[in-house]
Length: 110
Image (cartoon, rainbow, N blue to C red; front, side):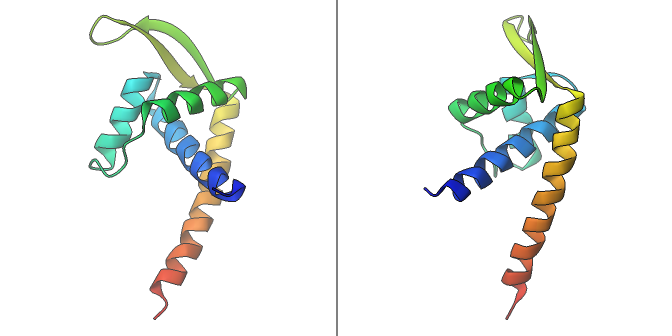
């Protein structure tokens, strides 16, 4: 896989996670569930990719976390956006929207 392909996939996953967390703190399973439900099961995030992305974004200062109890009364790490994370969401959304628009133009060409 080319570096550019990996950047696109990683950037897309980051964007989805950041957007999910705009609705408030969530643990990893809830993030994946929200994305799956919102996309009518079209996007399913693998656990390994999800937690790698969450940890990477936390290290970059885009997310912060704290331990709490899940709906099932189990210990879970809850992630929430930081101010820097909200800025990243806006920037990534703008880039992705531009990219998607360019791809749609190509697909519409007859």
